[in-house]
Length: 351
Image (cartoon, rainbow, N blue to C red; front, side, top):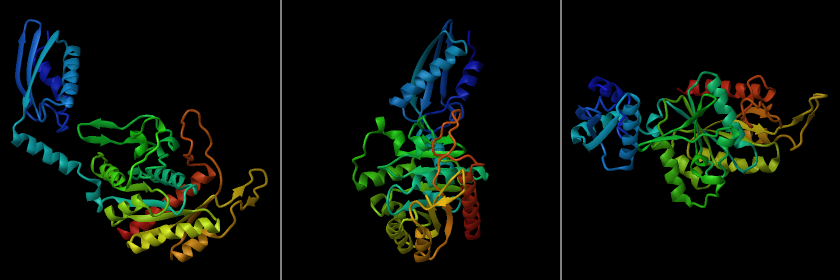
């Protein structure tokens, strides 16, 4: 037969779904009665009568039966407003909006003028490379229409949801949130601007991010609604512009750079992706998409070229499926490590 002390020990490990705090700590236990094989329990929680209460009820009953209870009877009542206010305010202080952490977190937007230049590949590998340098890193896949980060990083699980908070998925030391987690079967997104802005706002305000040194934002190409929302939400963001060497790609990318300058965002530099193809046999470089686009763009935006990244693909490790993440010792992985070091050095000067 279960004892009262065992009941308290079990409930100490279970949290109120809205206050995210142990049931024992918030004083939820109002009554424990043990009579023969029946355990009767009364709990006070923040929001009784909700779907979360049903989930909590199942969790409590299962845990108590595993601890030795034969039969469990549960009743719920509402916590006092004072207790709810106390622990809710503590949660706000501990979590809160990511937008309130601009003094601690460096926001870096990865943008481009057009699609197909490898912007998401850059975002993912920069995030992973920064994490390899010991930095706490998050990435928001803000390319709402063309979300691809989960697939590129080989993420198959979904974020955990507790109460009204969403917990990002972590892979390669990077915390990840993406529209792709909330869409079934790769369905197309047909939202308009205001709805997209609301989703972005949720990513900042309702996701339980750990303390971050860097947050990478993989923006949609161009200067549309999402890019405008990011510029208005994050006045302190820094930007990296991705282009290919092709003159047209660089010309279009200049628009994204001009938008950053007009909103007084700092441009950290230009990454020229798919800069060349290097033969493994001869070492000869072929400039498949031409030359000079990155340099010309950097000159126009009065910044520098952070790197020229060649055409290539990661080595496929069947044990660790991540189709777009380069290993640290890969030729292109080393280039991303150098980019990460430059970003750390540049942002260190600014802090």
